[in-house]
Image 1 (cartoon, rainbow, N blue to C red):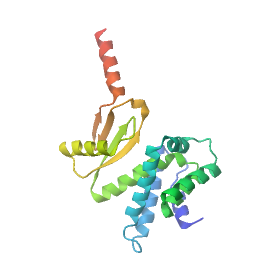
Image 2 (image 1 turned 90 degrees about the vertical axis):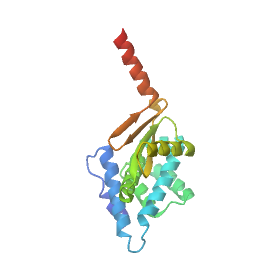
Image 3 (image 1 turned 135 degrees about the vertical axis):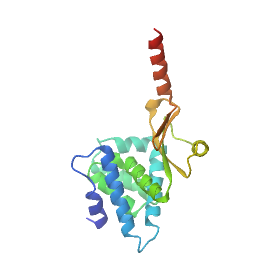
Image 4 (image 1 turned 180 degrees about the horizontal axis):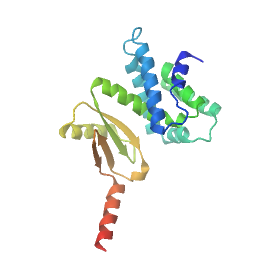
Length: 201
């Protein structure tokens, strides 16, 4: 097993929460990037860009999201399909090793969360504020720009979006940045309407 795999493998606790798994793998990956700084100053940025590209593929492709989340596929099938995707996207090195370790540990479903967590670590280093945006459907580039513009108008600077697709919110969006939560989802609006109707009964 390569040193990269061993470092990432140690990131997985024996009885973790989903958030704990993502944070540990992301921190291990960042540590690896820091170890490479002498030979490659921009290693963290390169790894972050590759993870972001992989996450974008997952975010925009429902079949890929379903495959990653489905525990019924064995490690061989997961490795074959994921490595083929990585190869076509030109993603190699540490991110490829990360995917291999996640598959070996039966943690492939944690990949989007690891990408989120790594992006948040990089953003914190850059002094960026991360806005966690949940929508029922993937955002377009225009919508992303509009959200960043609105948050900038609201007083947030150097904003980075961390996106999640959750069809259960039906429509609208939920934005969490810092300690603030803006919930404009259709699901929440329907719930508020339901409570209002119960109160009027």
